[in-house]
Every structure is written in structure tokens, then in C-alpha cells.
Image (cartoon, rainbow, N blue to C red; front, side):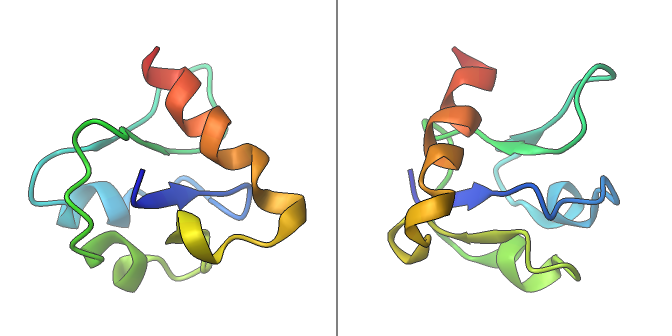
Length: 77
């Protein structure tokens, strides 16, 4: 997975709007958006569009945020 959305997400949808491959989704029952690890092309457009800095490269996650890699993948599993 190239990029991950963390709990800083405020559900604005700006990341989903700029994703060129449509890899970012959510559901009515969720409190954040998620990046599909099988569709993300690591372009970084979502990271730049996020005003709350909720999106980052999986390689740049702090130790206390690593669980978001699994959380994002599970949404699509």
C-alpha cells in the first residue's frame, strides 16, 4: 500500500475527488475514507489534497499509526 488514511480524516472527500484511479472510498457507516491498496498508484495527489494531513505514505507512519495500514486494507477485504 502506498498511501494510508488515518483517523485525522474529517470526511470532506477532497482526497477521493482528486484520486486519478478512484482508489479512495467510504461507506455511510464509516467515520473516515480508506485507500484501496490494490488500486493506489502512489501518485500522492490525495496527500496534497488533504487539509487535515490525514493521508501519508505507509512508509512514513509513526509506530502508533501503523495499524491504519491494516484498517484501510480491511475495508476492501
